[in-house]
Image (cartoon, rainbow, N blue to C red; front, side):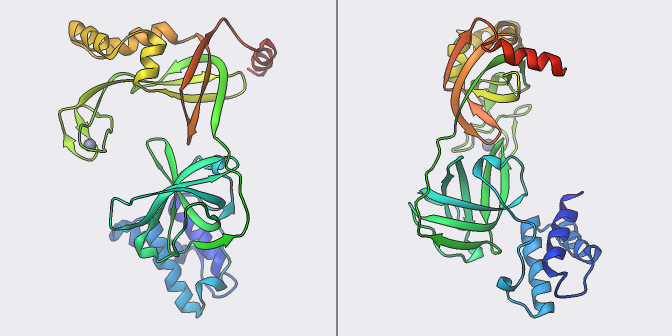
Length: 309
Ligand SMILES: [Zn+2]
């Protein structure tokens, strides 16, 4: 099902008890806004919802929230999902844009996630340390890191209770089975606060720029049950490979080719067993603490894996 169709379905569910409207009608309205007027989908959804609220003579509170489901922070692994979270505001940051009313970090027992609250959504202010039920927030993803957006359909309810915030550190023991593209000697955008990885010398946001070299590894580590995506930053990559950024640059210069660095690193680490600890960001684990193991830590698990293949 397409995204638009899914949203149309959600909206239809909210109104089907109140007015005679088909999913196709809703989808057509959304499609017009998204395709012809280039309105972002959450905006389009709000606008179409408002249209039907008016048609039905209802207030926002009158309609069911169909579509959003209660979720934990650790469940967030896909953008554009409408969910309900019960979370504590751990930290508020200064918004860097006028379009953002509040930005910060939310936490629940399963982990932490960034949130953004749009200025135009006209929602009550969240307080640092407060625990809230946040209904109808939408998930978003940027470079593998997930966040939630509070929008004008979001309902905020302050709860008079404590909520323990889990540290979302992962520990993985397993074989590093693959190194993904975008590993090795990379170039990042030098613009302030950008740091996007350049593709063919271009930043998605700033176009052609003089990149700055960096080292990183995006790897897949298989613990016998799941495959985990692990990111090694420059320091972790240097520690893991024993190759410094300077050495990597020299190596690339000699070969007139930056891909040689990734090839060297892959030859060194793919197939090796590691214990890796670090915080989880969306689907990635950031390798903070890495030690090499002799072999499979748990032969039993490997057997189970082998049988399942
Ligand atoms: Zn940039």
